Image (cartoon, rainbow, N blue to C red; front, side, top):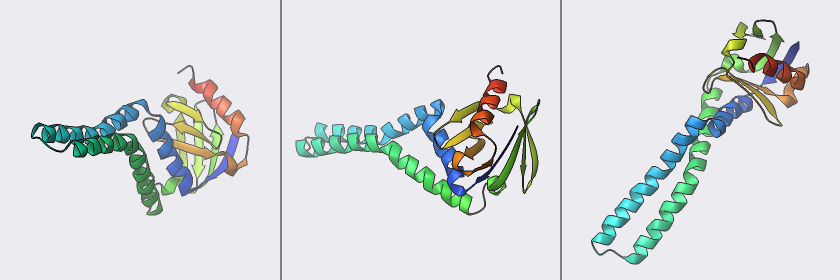
Length: 171
């Protein structure tokens, strides 16, 4: 089975954001990082109130701490997206831009690009994820390929995903 598609910088950013949104370990870290500034503000407010500080300042500070905790993840995600776009625009991931030919074999996936041929054994594939717009094939934490459905030039992305899933579920 063969699949031919093209990738753009938007697709490379999409795989980074998918990993950011769905990796459990990274999610725990995001929650922790989101709480640190809010906890620091609350500690400062507590110390201020112990010294007879303003109750208005305390209420405003508590509101700020809650707002910061709730918005921190969104802020981090936007910074990640901006950083990934800049990085890919300046050369990172050039091997993954452009046209890709994927072929399924008994041993795994053969990927052919303008930069050469790469073999991916079935045992190297750690996860397969599908969204309405893309198919993500991961080879470890955050490393993988994205197949944008709208840029499939030849082949059937659904059948391709089903075959990859069948080969990797038993591993």
